[in-house]
Amino acid sequence: MPPRRIRISKAIRRISIMRAMFITRRVEFSASHICANPEWSAERNFAVYGPASNPHGHGHNYALEVTLEGEPDAATGMLFDLKRLKDILTEEVVEPMDHRFLNREVPPFDHVVPTAENLAAEIWRRLEKHFTPGLARLSNVRLYETEDMFVDYSREAVSG
Ligand code: NI
Image (cartoon, rainbow, N blue to C red):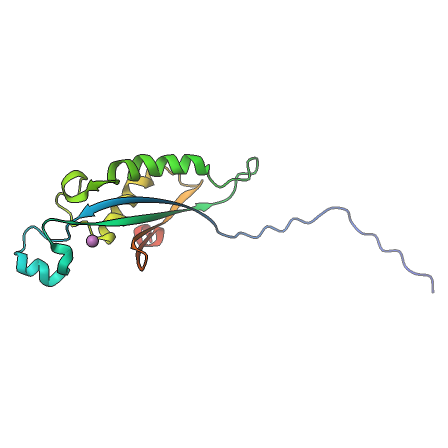
């Protein structure tokens, strides 16, 4: 029996698989703070926050990792311009917070306790306006207060 000729279509079937892609930029800044609720007594603040409630303050070397989610642009191959992302982080976080006393110099921490949790939420608030829904969007803010402790504040936690 002669072999049958098999015609192979040259048309390539495009299979589109949607995957999430994330890109992260890290910056560092140093700041001092007092973790204390000004409406409480010194004793109660010490009971809750420990030595972090010392009214003279103490410092941390913070590291901030900001993650964007989206699809790379077809022409540039980039999800977001990382140079621009660094400029946004510098303008919104590093310049206003680096070498500052958060409780005294950086609103809203004159009346909001500057825990890592509250700092991460404030950083999210400052950054979110720079990203356009449908394009690269803010996905996660990770703030390290020490090498051993970090907070994640993510899109799921904000909008469900
Ligand atoms: Ni502290």
